[in-house]
Amino acid sequence: MVEVRAEMVANVWKIVVADGDTVADGDTLVILESMKMEIPVLTEDGGVVRLKVAEGDVIQEGHVIAVIE
Image 1 (cartoon, helix red, strand yellow):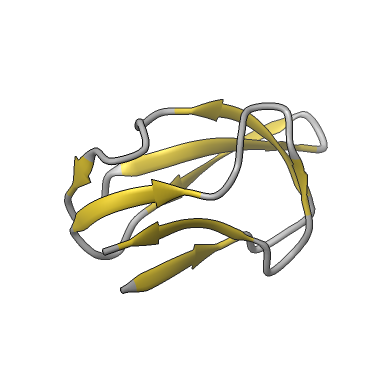
Image 2: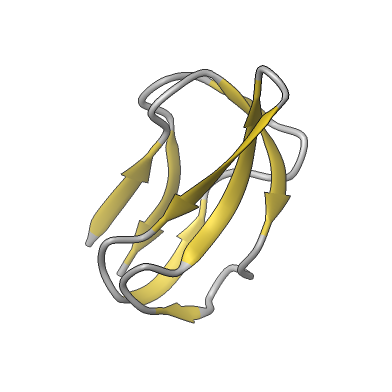
């Protein structure tokens, strides 16, 4: 089990995968928006994704975005 965490304060602009989807290394999970920049969040591991955020959420640095099982 791997946690994918936010590296900065941002808004969850778009969720690219659905909860329960199978993802591979390098897949985009969500797109964050910070200071008018879009930042894709990629997974570094494959597995089943469990999302911990929703579109429109404001997240802080270190917030868990998803868990890869």
